[in-house]
Picture 1 (cartoon, rainbow, N blue to C red):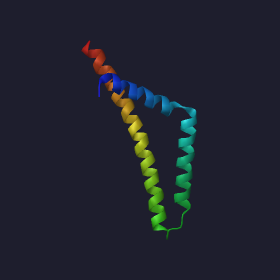
Picture 2: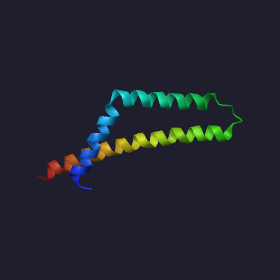
Picture 3: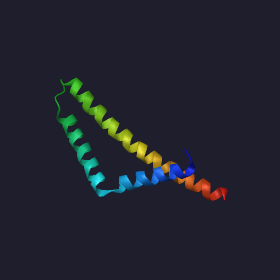
Length: 83
């Protein structure tokens, strides 16, 4: 992937993560999952594990977006210093 592609991917990730609709949806889904997990019966081990895995997947997705944004910043920095 070229520096330009890395930067564009980071810009797009930032645009998505900064969008108020995305942020509201993210918060609602996280809240719903956490509430379902925290109020689930202790005996429902499989259900609690599934909810926890869903929370983990969402956090991994958010981390991936953050990584794209960080890579873009690094590419911008290195491109500016190379010139």
